[in-house]
Image (cartoon, rainbow, N blue to C red; front, side, top):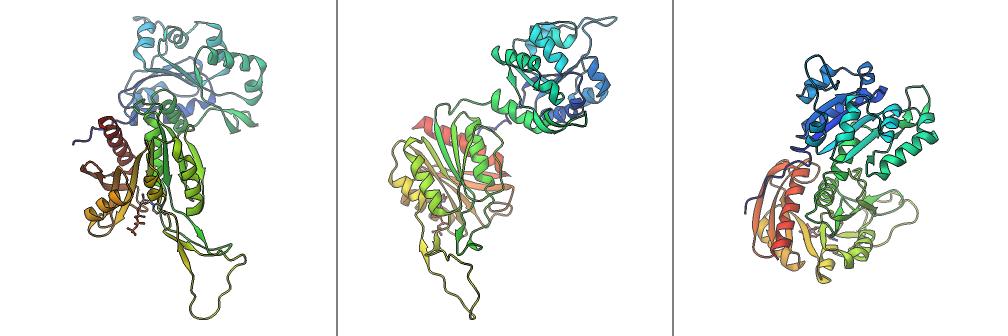
Length: 406
Ligand code: CTP
């Protein structure tokens, strides 16, 4: 089976970016760069006040489109209706207090507002203003009005403001704006209504209050899988062992655990409701029989620690399988296929994603991975070395195909 090319979420999307007069307009340069890098087509419009803060030349060059500023100039009229209809989303970033007030009141005294009033696409705004203006009753009323007609408001940040004060009102960072668009405007629906659980990262098995037995798993693969499931519309719970990773999307529920026992407790409690379960965590197979209450002092030349087997979470989920599509991971150094197929059967999994330690740049500690997917219906598909986020999307597409074929 051929894997469909997995287009980035923003590829080919038409984004109309309106920039109004705020010091935060300098951030729109990076925003345009991120959007175009993600494959979006960006057209920039600016109010006249915005020209004080950022140059149309820079924005035009980065967006590959002439920046639109005037409704009329000497020899042409900008067709605001067609611009509003062209876009998949209209994004106002930064949205100044003044332009917010005009939008909320239906004013139409510049090109950006004329386009806004003609736009038939979803509208997203990213406000930027001083804290006192942000908290003013008039601003609150205007924001609430925009929300009441279905516009989406990207939360403002907290931090240093242009006035020298410190507080709420900063425009969201460009990366957060891109993630907001992905999550709120361009999220897919192939798994809408499905509940999914992913385990990720290592587990730490404590020996005493300061030491543990752990492993080098970063959690990157599991986090990427949770994000890919979520972006296909699933409701996702991510059960993560100790990891510095953060999820990109606010809608993913993250449960942080430390030990294999805690991971088992959390996963088994969630199991009954799940439709898809992906166990990508590197769970410790053995844990110290007892955790010493006080720090262990060194004594003698050798030390014995009694280890006891942890519960095999994937195995338990397989043994209690009902409606769930169950996916496990296998990290092998030799006889890869044989061991992977063995795990598919012994754990009653529907799919095993196999990593081989013989492949360079794959698995633990790398940003890239190279895997082979084995399915219980005899399928075997190799995915070439790619960024873990791409591999995750390909695995999820394969799961969607398997679920639909079943
Ligand atoms: N797994 C689990 N709970 C455990 C151990 C592993 O859920 N206590 C899951 C992992 O998340 C992964 C799969 O089981 O999906 C790995 O299978 P396993 O047979 O445990 O692999 P190894 O630990 O590598 O075992 P072996 O050393 O026997 O190959």
